[in-house]
Image (cartoon, rainbow, N blue to C red; front, side, top):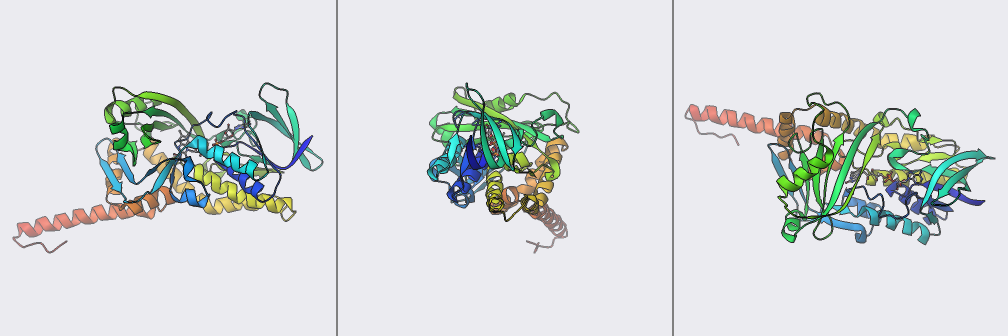
Length: 412
Ligand SMILES: Cc1cc2nc3c(=O)[nH]c(=O)nc-3n(C[C@H](O)[C@H](O)[C@H](O)COP(=O)(O)OP(=O)(O)OC[C@H]3O[C@@H](n4cnc5c(N)ncnc54)[C@H](O)[C@@H]3O)c2cc1C
């Protein structure tokens, strides 16, 4: 039976990065993925701020496009921010995962595509893992540490779906479409998000640029009962069509790909982080932000942190992964709790008018403040927007009074 120090199940961003880190440290690693190619399961829009590339040493070859403009459109409000330099990237999700797997083999690890994890059991202090290669009989491999990087399915930590706890969930679908050059150029540098009942009731939709003449057009819905809306709104795909027809005004385009997935998120970071020699990373421990469904860099961050604890475990410096769980809670619990509350309000409670109003508040912020809020969870920036609008209204009020009194306004 083949034996490894660490077996990682799932070659998404989290699993790939964890395997890459461990292989680079000389650990004998096996990365296992059920899909036979990285083009399969290409579900993510893969938007990320610019710092992700440097932080995780990712090459420009995995970037679909760079963006320096953000546009948010609600039913009655439109706000736009622009920077002279790139602020983030839309990654090619397939190329990202392929690159990470390539790094694993380059550093002496093994990558087995087309192998599905079936089960694992303990045997004399080690773990025996059963894998099913496509079209062949199951095989057994031995490991000292097993990693659940299977994303929202959490195949190792919750092998029986029926016994899993209730998860908050959101479902997204995205089309990759080829468009004419002028349509592409009108969106080539922008992340465009759509909120509100007109565009995507109970969720949001988007248009992102990919490689030349290719756009990602998608929509995601937060699952659950809305406080105001009846449960009769259009299917997710219809909301994508609305963007294509009513925003892009396209009569003809070529749909190259349709992909999507459902994210299952455990509120309050109550996931199972470890059990005996098994440790979970990425979406398997809800490393995805509930507000915008952004999880790539957070999954990779959890993988990086886990790889350090795994190395200490392997040399006997740690007996379990309790400190790994504390580490993630320290870093993510506060922003995740607040994001979750905001997500529930915006997607499941707010009227269309409240959404318009929220966007108007956001609109008075500088671009850097909006990025800090959406990507770095500086929630205090939200109150800045409210305060600035309130102050400008107050100023207008006094100016009118002074004018009526025939006094020139000195308030600015
Ligand atoms: C529609 C949509 C759009 C998104 N857009 C963005 C975005 O713009 N930016 C962003 O940062 N995040 C985005 N996300 C979220 C992001 O893609 C995820 O958070 C991220 O992919 C999680 O990485 P992961 O490695 O934990 O899991 P995954 O990427 O889900 O990878 C898990 C892997 O495990 C494999 N696997 C599962 N079960 C088994 C098994 N039994 N045996 C073997 N292999 C198995 C799967 O095939 C998969 O390849 C989006 C998600 C969706 C659904």
